[in-house]
Structure formats: C-alpha cells, structure tokens
Image 1 (cartoon, rainbow, N blue to C red):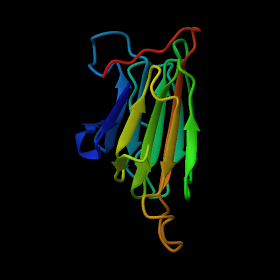
Image 2: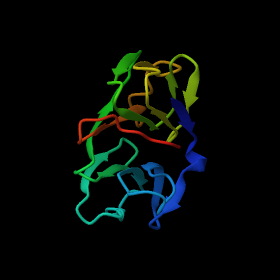
Image 3: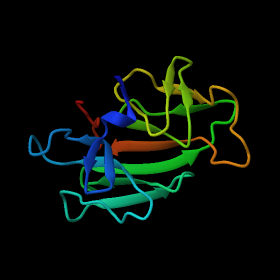
Image 4: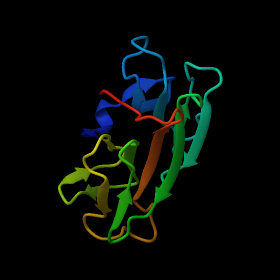
Length: 166
C-alpha cells in the first residue's frame, strides 16, 4: 500500500502540531499504537494517548521537529533524516510501515510522486519494498535549508506484521 499525504491535509492537534499519520487514524476506534507529528519550532512534546509511550524527536533543517510516539508493547520505532542528494534508495521489510516526510523543500519519490515540504508518503504491505528518493532539480542551495527526507520505520514489537488502515 502506498498513500500520499499532502501537508495541507495533516490534522492540527495540540496547538502547534500537525499529525502526519497515526494508528489508529480514528481516535477511540481501536487501541492506540503510534503517531507521527510535525511540531512547530519551539513547541514542546505533543500529547500521546498512552502515558508510557516511547518518544523519538528529530530536529529538521527548517527548525521544526519530527516527533514519533509509540506504544513500546506494540511498536518499535526508528527515525533517521537523510540527504537524498542526487538519489538514494530507502529499503524496508515487508512487515514494517514506512513513513517518508519531505522537509525543507521538494522530493521526487519513485520517479513519479512529487512531495512538497511537509508532504508524506506511507508505505505498508508488499508494495514497494525499495523506494528511490531524490531532489527533483538536484541538491538545493548551500546557503539555505537543504531538502531532507525524514524516514520513520515502524515495526511490530510482537513479532507479527504491523497493520495500518488509513
């Protein structure tokens, strides 16, 4: 499954946060497992429905923060911010959910999806397992914020496939 999420569709939460993706996507429908949020510069941690949630916060080139919160009993989460340069391939396991977030500018994913700043792509299931990401016009200027891709990897802490239904 491949789902493109435009920045203007992210849900506003906690007064300065934008929720990029979460499971479940509809609160109170099923037990909370994880969330990916963009926090405005100077904004503290967002609220998570589970008091024992594990939080990972990564600074982005534009001054914002990417925050991932997850129930450690259900989900293992990792975050890295990459400079795709002229091109890079992001790999994932079939059992994982991968969230790619463009930050600081535009990115071209799979040579067909143009992501603007703060747009995201969620990948789950068996298609695709390897994703090409690059700057559409080459690397950005050296005197300004460089476009990066924030890579959020979510896997099951229980040893089974992590599901996500948008």
